[in-house]
Image (cartoon, rainbow, N blue to C red; front, side, top):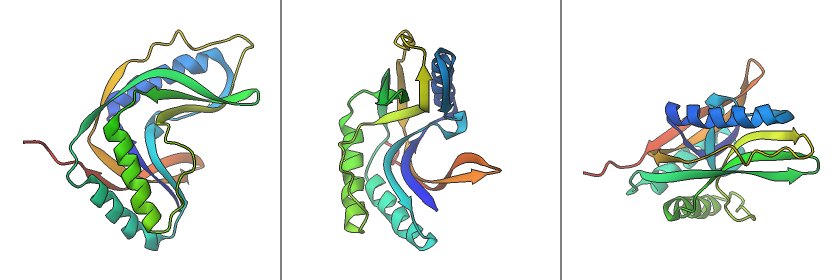
Length: 180
């Protein structure tokens, strides 16, 4: 199974992001756009694993989440990674020390278990579409983005196909502690 560790969003946040995705989609000629149900923020892509590895990955999530409290992320811009005449369109996250620390701890613990360290620096984003093509001078800079998101948990997600539809299924989740 193919897995990754992510921040899942509440339904109202997915709805907000999906509305922005539809604005971008209207401005494009074509692309493979995310389904609303699949909207998330990837903390660490792991790749193919055996079912026997799930327990160790769940333990890492437990250890990283222990002693952490919910925190606020702010999404504040649209951007793209160019790939020739196509691109990946994403929503960017304002720099957040708690998010970067979470990613760094995950990377360190997973490396201790023998998983590859990411060679690129962590660039947190929410993917809206892949292989997106725009008209020559089309831009999406007029699509406003400004939303605060409460991060309450992290999840181990499986990337699978259900009835030939790409679906991200939570395999294990750990909520952060509640402040009293």
